[in-house]
Image (tube, rainbow, N blue to C red; front, top):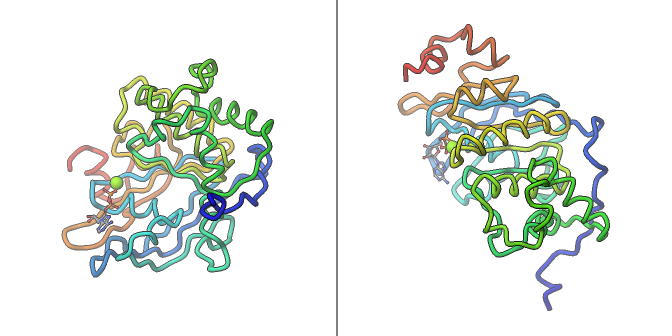
Length: 277
Ligand code: ADP
Ligand code: MG
């Protein structure tokens, strides 16, 4: 029967996003490989609760790999290897006694290309995250969750009258906000976003940036962006990744975003934020 395929939903829905659930994410000496190719070399970064951290740097320097390591997606690649630790409020998310679905509930991810389930309704899309991570919720909780998640994603007012319409019928920017709502439905403590606006028009980008600023009060946010103006607008902390010819990616410099853009300490950071490479 179908019941054999799906794990039973056993986890209770956590309380609504609250300051007490704010969590610090800390990467300690992360190195990563694909086969023999090392792509990150001892990268450490603390991503504090309640702020947006932006990861910037040229393409290929390991930003997406680092982000995927932060919610255990790296280990899904057969050739991938990893050293170091990722701590969520001091607890190692790779601890063998912690299940993968636990990491998925705590730490959500949004990708560059919006990926809602196109044939599913808007409401079903929001609730899909519960199913995938085994979270149990009553029907009335579900209705409340749908409204809460869509509101936090900045999409509620646009779709409240057509929750049964297919997710695939929305515009690109709306689809991305639907994906954000889907991530928020399990009430995560961290939201990772990999170039979430790169495929969107400026208006949709603006809406999502405003959403992020609001969300950061309740969820720790880490965003990869190649858009420096965006990093300046949305983040309070910034980390500059770089992989020089043949060497794996490292964090060259990190710190307060405004300070880093106005007076970078490393000449390579200065060259990058100054648009010189
Ligand atoms: P960024 O997001 O900064 O552009 P990535 O993390 O995507 O960088 O890539 C870093 C390096 O890892 C690149 O050299 C890329 O080719 C390699 N890489 C990324 N994903 C894989 C994979 N699944 N298998 C093999 N190599 C990969
Ligand atoms: Mg990338």
